[in-house]
Image 1 (cartoon, rainbow, N blue to C red):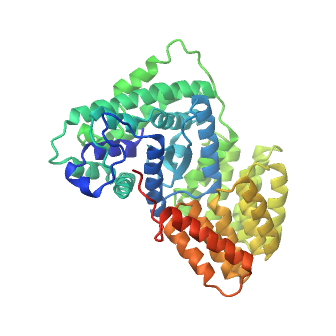
Image 2: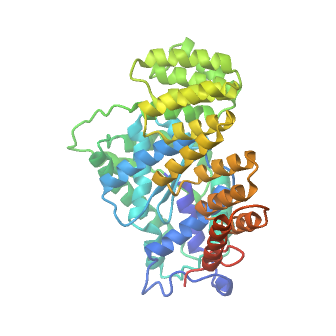
Image 3: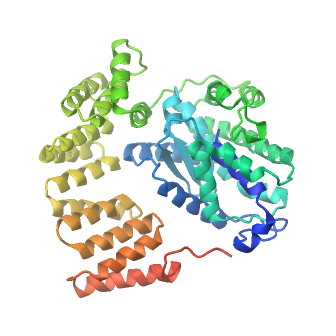
Length: 483
């Protein structure tokens, strides 16, 4: 189920010892010591910086929030307490998901769109959570008794190569001429896959999802991948779904009563939003109009929402508004924050910022847990030149979500519009800190100190923050390597 993780296994197996002088040893003698959770987190954070820099993360707040809600539910059901998880979407129509050491789980939008039911998406995520909770990377290194000579930069490159679709070529290049036992690599890979399947199905059951969704999704994935990967050597098939895995998963269902698990409205709406995000807007509009005309949909409200969102992305705001009203009518009086977020976004795109402010404010009263609505309100207030009100919302939000980089980025934009460059650079610096991009953060704090104006307390706070970051990461903002 995951392409990147397996490529990383090949990557670690095939590193030459001649690299040792240039790479940090994160594990010491692996016969005596396995990677610690802190070291796994360090690897994951380094890889995440590389993935973020690629520009292919899906930044949509509703998709991000949904994946993390679903992921948290699964983590709690799995009883994992020794890892902090972060779930993130990757804007890519291919069917892929991957786990990075340290609790980072990436899900391609293609998986969300392909899932016919929420339990199928949950099965993919439960599988990836098991890879993390069982510390498969550390166990692989310990089992092979190889020194884990891991370069974070090289790790990021390997992940990006796999994500970009060149994983097979990358793995082949690293494997060629190295003389390691490929079969042993395969044995570890399959063992990890089987363990992740077993634990993932247990997690599905405990979380209230249908465990039969896992083999069902496997079978569909195998059909999709058969033509694409049938010519590749088996050890380079980066997430092999074999008949044995499917049979094993089906065997685990014996004696388990059938459980019909309804899809949440959140899933139905996010699936259509993900579909629209990964398609060209014009193609998405044609798709929804055709399927609506032919009544080929599982949920009318979600499908009409998909059309409204596609029209919005295409810039046809009047038609998007009309389609949105039809989606609201199909859903009924319960409403949904996704509908209100799209309504406010349409009005904001039309230049009707005051109406957008009112929509977001009313929606926040109905759906206070939606952080996307808070972002929308700040953006609408900024467009309406209600800068002080927007900054007040940001201040209140940061008391609840101090690690949210998006609030700092919005604050930086507002300060710039107000002609307050010192505050703007300071806020942008805090934005980079939350992304663990300490070099750019230091640069922003220095730019802030070079701006005219500013009172003593503001200057002192910026200087103190700069000293703190430089003390931890050096004057160039590079994270200190772990011993």
